[in-house]
Amino acid sequence: MILGLIASAGGGVERRLRPELAEPAVARGWTLAVTLTPTAARWLAATGELAKLQSLTDLPVRSEPRMPGQPKPYPMPSAFVFAPATANSVAKLALGIADSQALTAACEAVGARVPMVVRPQAGDAQRGHPAFAGHVKALREAGVLVSDEPPEVGWEPMLDLLEGP
Image (cartoon, rainbow, N blue to C red):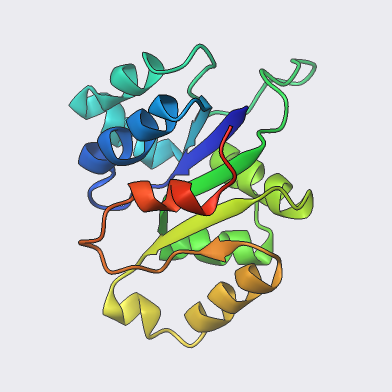
């Protein structure tokens, strides 16, 4: 079964995504379909993490959309984890704004009711914005599991919230 692993450019993505989510998911038997926001892709490429993520899957690690006429590189994943999901990504996902490959994949998954866990990563000022709570509420009402744990809590437990492969 394919796990869609989506990440935006939240601090720590360059040191947490692979060891805390990607490697444990592969160890559990998932095939990874990794999709990154453009900034997350740049960060991971700069630290060498992009190549390490690619080595964990035979599917392409994506951050750019397909060209017109190109087929999708894989079927819709069976489940998704979006971590970290910045305040910007949470807002866009809640509003259905698919302005990057990562948000396109996430929005399609929400619309198709594919199981998804989202781990918001936002500071106190971002969480204090009057729209933030409404965005989280909208995601929950759409069936998204929002794992809003403190930053020090590891990411691997999000995999426990999904039915395994």
